[in-house]
Image (spheres, helix red, strand yellow):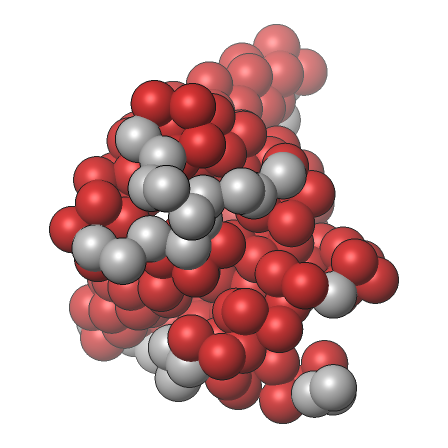
Length: 181
């Protein structure tokens, strides 16, 4: 069994075998949550100037909720709407497997680089989506990568909706408290 660090690197290098191992390791839920939190903190630190400590905390909460919704949507669409004959994933294994797809986000602190930060951030997001496609293909036992891409896109739209709603809630709270006056 690979260590936590080896799993993070395996997910970052898009190794299908890493995602398969995570899928079958029922004790990896804490690690998956850890990856999501580490990625959120790192991306938050990269954007520290704009969000401050509150932005980091908001990012962690939003990331955990949004990944939870993404996992539920991926699981529902992948197992109920678009399953392959071999598909037999449950929600916990889906969450922990796609949680590791956040691994490229642990490099998010480098987005603090002026001017290049936005380009790097875009690259990290694309990398995370690629990792998500591999994770979904493996956890849902798909033989067709295009099917995994479709499920990821549907889940990503739900992820974005949660992120926007959470962002509006936190910004609204900040405005109401006078923090953004």
